[in-house]
Image (cartoon, rainbow, N blue to C red; front, side, top):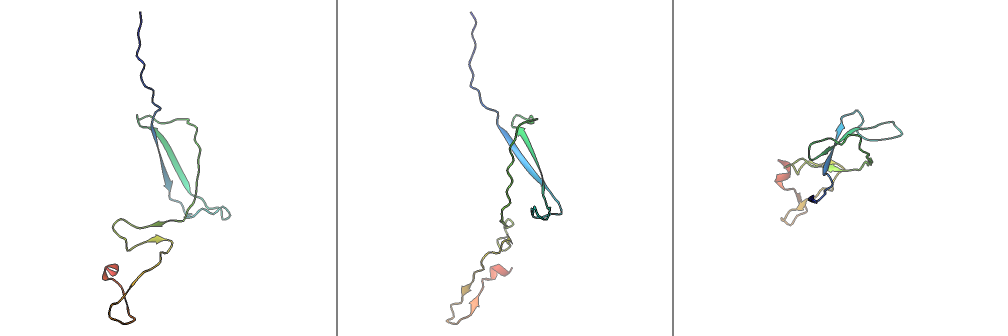
Amino acid sequence: MHSFKVQEFRKPEYEVSSMIRPTIARYCHPIADEYVIATCQGKLFAGGYLNDANVQWTVQAETTTFTPPKRSDYIFGRAQPFFCWFGNNNQTEISYPEKYFQ
């Protein structure tokens, strides 16, 4: 008599990383023949690479903004509305918090 154990099968988990290499073109514009070069790599969490794997690519360009960590006074990208506080001295002066000018 022979026996065997049935173990649970789990689909291998993997990660995909991508990297954009610097190019002269900063924006994609098909008419001006500008482009961005990207490299993607797939890897099993067990350590092996996903060689010859079928992949589907989707690339989208979106307008975005960037604020460096701990520097909420700097915003790169589309301009954000500026705000201010009116002084409480019953005049029409506009006063700005000092923290935004340090």
